[in-house]
Image 1: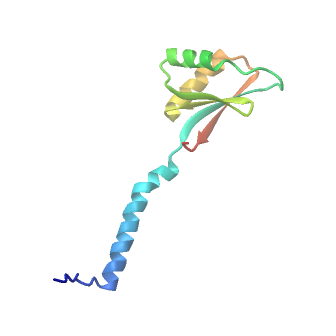
Image 2: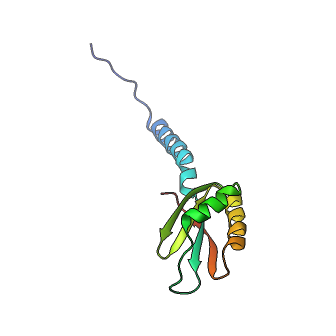
Image 3: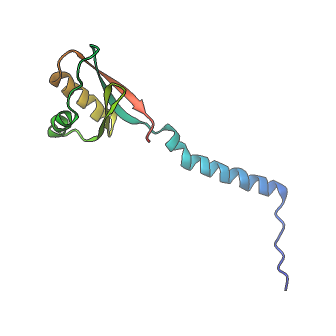
Length: 112
């Protein structure tokens, strides 16, 4: 017994294909615009040492700021945080904690 499938008209095939692509795009779109909030800490003077990451972690954690990670990167420390609010709070804490010869800047990263 041979089973024959109904032929789908070309216009309907095109419409279904476009609808499928639109749904896929809507599902994937947020991942293209997702960013991680991060602070970048550098020394102002060449040859100065960076602060200890574990010390910074404890200081921020004790103030209720959740840190995703602290990693060294090309002569600086990158502190990844959950949100922009956490990033702003961490910046305020770090500016009070670290001496003025450290540069603290916001950095938007794509997730790894």
